[in-house]
Image (tube, rainbow, N blue to C red; front, side):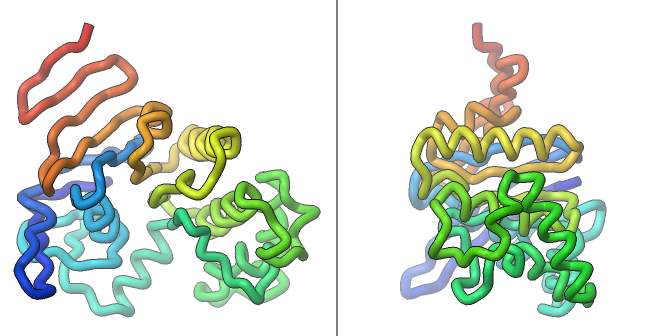
Length: 238
């Protein structure tokens, strides 16, 4: 599903900042993966490249066996709309649209009629226990409710991949558990879910943890059988 070969990324805001340094990574269809790292480790840059929100300098990124490189904004938007659903820490809900309209928004860009997209939006809100809140504005919702609206919005276009950037960062611990439960249920349907987080409790809910440090992959941990791949050498944790 996702294959990265030697991905490098440098930002030039004054002195060059080499953020990603030769990233090699494979994520299979249906995996539930977390990307962990401290501030400045490169995890957000990596997520932006995976989400076709940013370009890389050298290397190769294959998404569903298609090389993603130097796409026009129109072409990039087509891939994002068809393949990827996004969930953000700050929810990114449109303040002047109600919950139903926020969830329906991706279908607007797919030229789905208003009646059909609103009906589908209510279905997805119902799945997440929020149907009765469909006509409420974002400022009338709690943090957990806003994040569930954001999850419904990410799911409505039936993407193949969910990219979640610190999805529990603005939530209390109880609501964080609820959000991770929802993402696990989404993954159980066969959808690939990738979560960027700095919280070990969140990462431990995923099946695989990719640890970034200073722009390189420091370790890959398989939570299902506790295998750890460190700098290319396997070390079985007892």
